[in-house]
Each structure stands twice: as structure tokens, then as C-alpha cells.
Image (cartoon, rainbow, N blue to C red):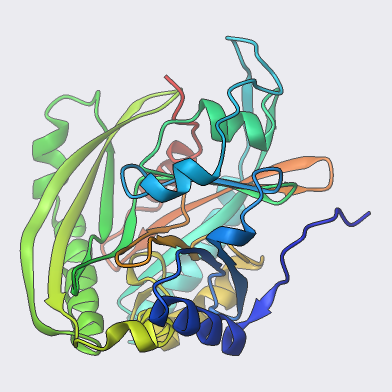
Amino acid sequence: MLQYFPYPLLNKFYIVKKINELASKNISFLFVIDFKGEEGYVISSAELDEHFVKFDFGDNQSELKSILKPTDNLENDNELFYWDIIPVSFDAYLQKFNFLQTQIRLGNSYLVNLTQPTKLHSNLSLLDLYKKGRAKYKLWLKDKFTVLSPETFIQIKHGKIAAFPMKGTIDASIPHAEDLILNDPKEKAEHATIVDLIRNDLNMVAEHVEVKRYRYLDRLSTNRIDLLQVSSEITGELPEDYLSYLGDIIFMLLPAGSICGAPKSKTVDIIESAENYEREFYTGICGWFDGENLDSAVMIRFVEQQGENLIFKSGGGITAMSDVVKEYNELIQKVYAPIY
């Protein structure tokens, strides 16, 4: 049975059109776009209804916080919660991994982000996860999904654009974890590939593009373990009239390089052949434009409602140097709730 949702699902043409119109008039809005860049939502501040959508993107929402009233009561107010997962089997993952290795050896790609759905059993609802979870970017769409993402897609402040690709994850409790992740040849090569790809992407829309910070570490706390993740910062300057075609700029940068691979177009085709499921909104983007500046996230740490079931989607980058056991464990490692 389809649940009522008041916002129309727009195709790419109407997403771009609405973003351009609202941005050029300095009207604030939320946008949510799927992985393939084919469908999504654009919701102006006047249209926001907390019964159907909630989000918290940190300090970039002063206007929003006066529009949406906070509701602190949880659907499930227990301090304790259970979190049982049923990931894809190792054998099934191995088949997909081997297919990608063949594609890499053939020269069709040199970095592929392989993701899979994991069945999740928990006493927490999507709304509970949103309210209890701690993340830089939080988004809840009623009866659809919850995002608790640590990863920025792009930020635009006073005409300057910045991207923060995140690539490289390790259990923070492992002895010398920081040195291991920063000096691992596979991780170094994978991160360099993504930084180069994102730098090229920004060069399509901005000038004076440069890498401001390279391979810095963030620590993420979860309900299971703490993780270290590696990011970089790349910046550029947009033309003065960029607000009039902000929607076009966003779509020129899709899909996010960190969650597909390189080269983009061919790698997306390879992903569709390998994964054998639809990502839909997972690894798409969401963002908030406040009338002047924009902040946005890659929709990872993603829990989806499918009928009565919860599905957590996760993954990681595969290169010629990847170890299948490590990659499989990383996929499972990322199936967590940032509740602590």
C-alpha cells in the first residue's frame, strides 16, 4: 500500500528548472536527488512540513529552525536498542568482487564503488534513527528513508565552491590505525584517484580550483565501534551569475565521484551490472540552500523502508590492489547507527 507523501517526485528537467528559479530569487529550499540523477524532490521553505520531512545540516539552517518546530519525543523511547544485520553472503560478494576485478584488468575502470543492501532488524524506526542519531547531515523522509551522513558533497559560500571527498575507512581501535590508513598503498591510490576526479569535476563549473587539504582524518563514533575516515578539501570560485543556473551546476557534478568511481560514465555502467539491485536514493545527494549559500551531503549511512523491512545500504571502493576479505568486512563495518 502506497503511503501519502505530499511532494511530487520530479524528473531531472523539473528539478533543474525549480532549483534555478528558486535560487535566482534567493528563496531557500531543500533538494533530494537520486544516485542516477534522474528523480528527486525540491521543496521550498514555504512548503516544508515536519510531518513528512525533517533535516538537520548543522549550523547552516538558522532560517529553517524557525520554520520547523523541534519534536523530541521518540516513537521508541527505550535507551537500549537492538541492531541485528543480515549482510550479503561472502560468496555472493566474492562473485561481484571478481567481476569488478575483471573489468579493472580490462581497463574499463580503475576504481569502482561496490555497494550492497543489508537486511536490518531493529526496534528503532526511521524516525527514531533520525532523532537519536548523531551526524553532520541528517535527513528523514516519512516512510521512505533516513540518512545519517558524515560526508559533504559540495558547499557554496559567497561564490566559493568546496568539495570534500571521503575515501578510506578503518576501525579506530586497531593499533596504529592512523598510520595504517594513511600509509596503505591501496588507500593512498584510491584517495588520489577520487581527488583527481573531483578536481576535474569542479574545473567544469569553477575557476582557480585547488586542493586545500589532502587526506585529513575524521573520527566517527557509532553504536558498534569508532571509525577513522580520510577526506580531502578541494575549492574553486564560481562565476558571479551562478545562482541563475545553480541546478545545472549541481547536475554537472553528479554522480558524486566518491560513490561511483573513475572514469564516471563507464564505471556507473559497471556498477549496474555488478550490484544487481537498485541504489535509488542511496548515494544520491541532499542539500539546503538558505537563499545565499548552499550545503549538501552525499546520502551514505542510509536506511530505507521497504514494506515492513528496513534495509541498510553500504559499500566501498574497489581497485586492482583491493583485498576481498578487507572490502567485505568494510561493507559490514559501515552498517552502523551513529548513536552514542
